[in-house]
Image (cartoon, rainbow, N blue to C red; front, side, top):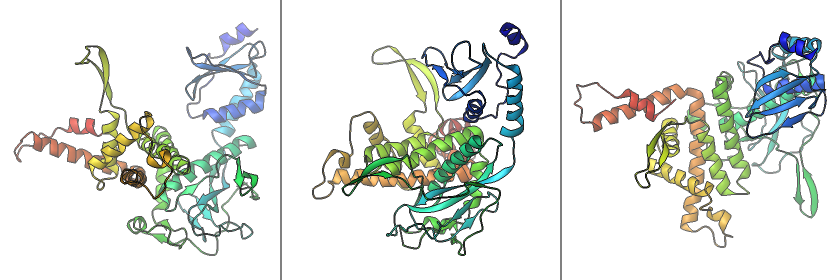
Amino acid sequence: MYSNLCTQMPKNLLIWPNLKPTELMILLHERMGGTWQANLSERKPCKLYIPMFGPTCRVVLEFNGPKIVAMEPDQAFDPTQWEQISSEIENSVLKGPTGVGREYSFCGRRVTGSWRGKLSGVQILPPPSEIPNVPTTSGDHPFILEFPLTKSHLYPLTNHRRLRNHRDLTLLLNILLAGGVRLMGRSTHCWAGTEWVQQCFSPALNPYITDTLSAPAANELAELEPEDYDKMPGDDGMGLRVPSDLDQSVCLYEALSDSNREKFDRAAFWFSTSFRIWHISVSAALAALVAAIESLTTSGNIHHFNCPVCGGGTDHRVPGPTKLFKNFLATYAPGAPLARDRADMYDLRSNLVHGQHLMELDREIPIMGWTPPGFKEGQQYYDLWSLTRTALRNWLKNRSYYLQQAREECAYFHWIKRGRPLWEADIDWALAEQEFPA
């Protein structure tokens, strides 16, 4: 019976290129249940057996890294059930009505009004009046974030989308808004005074999913032109304000291709992680900023050559990670600090991640403040944080413009270095594109 089914069904049942792996797994868990068993062999792609390995297995998922590359029928495969699941995927998972997801996020500045993006459909709302206020101007001030959501008839899948969209938008707003925006983080326990308590924030927020945006607050958040927004001082006690191009920035994020969206989400994660881990390790916080930048760089080509010292064969990447790091900042955060300072930042990062150094605040117990080297390390962190935030925003808003500017400058100076007279126009654009890959 099973052999006949195998001849009738395609070997790979995964025929939907836009189907997200996690959403497929939620659907399979709801429809097939089971304990699920995995083959984690390192010598071949991982396999997941649903509902479990053996004669009761209906389908096998094959993973290549985090991606599902194949789904094959197995011994207990039921073609009737699979026809129903396929219909669900096409009619309820890949398409569905649009609703609104809601969840709490936290801002470094108090949220006293609302903001609504007319194009993006994203809305910021102040917390309900019964939510206690943070007693200081700086802190984790709660607010409600609302956002568009494609609903499914399957609630666990719709709720997963709500949580995922909320996380992604919060990480995006952390880059775009002064004061930063944060998630609650995973629940844990800590000492509060002399009590062992659970860190959490769990006021009622019903409903979590609605059909339309909530009514705006009585007051609207002030909007500033992007140039003025970037010049705002630190926490000035004025509460959250937003740049006038916030709605456009959110739309640009939503319009990213799948590959660019994946890269930007990684960068946003590492940028957020840098802030959250700073109180534990400044060294790790700086390394996280470099990881945010490297998430958006393009690996150079690899070629093979013999080492001039030992004569052995080795690989060489052009351009290397250090140059890619410096070029990315030079492209998307032009200006101060100087290129030499950026090279020092990367050298510091390299020493940290390779276990050759710890920043002073991690290494010593401060007695009378930092030493001059420690002060310089602290300044490097804050400079790199500012550069990273600027670079991520510029990459999102107008990366083609900044990339073209960098390539033109590179080509021009390469042309000058070759001693070409002004009337010759044989600028080496190939070198410029290799130096500054997209």
